[in-house]
Image 1 (cartoon, rainbow, N blue to C red):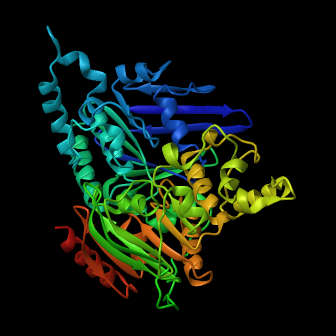
Image 2: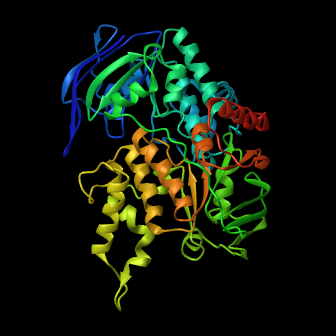
Image 3: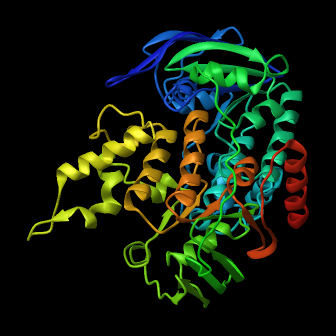
Length: 503
């Protein structure tokens, strides 16, 4: 159904794709895999008319496919769920889902809003999106916005559906709903292609895997005829190590951060928790369960109605995000790097160093030491393997995964005592994910940091957290202590326990 031949695309200073050829048939779900910067997003955006290829040709059902814009691709029956959040913030959830179909609901007196909302509700239900459809989309979490985008794509009834990291911020439960939908679409003759870094999901739902490395097509394999280790070797040229990280032993009886009875309607309902230095505390739950909402209340991005926060056993009146960082040394790696985590129009060096500028000021004028800024930025670039042309490259030009590395690197440079990681490996490739897991562990084990980990990735949560608090309806509904999973049976048991709290 879809055939690409010798697709080549070059951006200033970077050859993103080099003579890539792929064939994909109807009634199959395909995965497109590779490290960050391998060319995955560039390839699907080329098929979707977002980028024009420098060389090569594309065919759909034997007919030449040469879209000059995304609108042309839509007319050809192609829909794309982009890795970047793309919604209209002021529009309602229902309007965003049906945004390109508003004319269908126009009556003699304007838009028939009730009919539009009923139509949107069908697709919201398909993806498990449980929010008021009349609420503005700007108030939704990153995961909820992701589900809005998926619902919008499904509403187009496309014959080819591209999904770029569709489960990056949603849990196994929401992902399971999505995968059932994709299987139904496959049975109806829809070609589905998924870009993902979650190999366990790829093997669960995909029929065939295609691999890119450094802009070149490495090869393909059927999921039933290969395994994760072989695919990883294709992606990065080596095997990864799935090591047991061991045990954490928090030293102090006084919590580095304590939350007492924090409440705000729609965000947190009488939530209390403690995290000690040298500990990784996991917060798990479905989309909208209250994990990210609690983090925003802690750092004063939103105001709590009641409750208190203690830092090192002392009451802390946190007035702003800047106050959380500078006065109380609490850092927050946001789940939504595009809208909140990065200055997309600024260079890599500025984005990495901005939270550390105060410590870099020297002399009577308190000017920033630019030499130190360059050294510190380069340290993070090297440690996180951020793929850039140089430190002056604009962050908005980077791939999604490399942008996420910059977002994390900023807070690692700032040397916080408490770090809240909200979906830290969203959009991160296998090699970088392995490094970031080891890094988070070392922050707790070797640097004695207090870590709060918010993740929708169950294997990641169980691997890193030694205590997990389960959230549902903005409340803590369960807690699991002393986690140290050594085998598949223990993992299955723990996953089942967490699932029971969410039921």
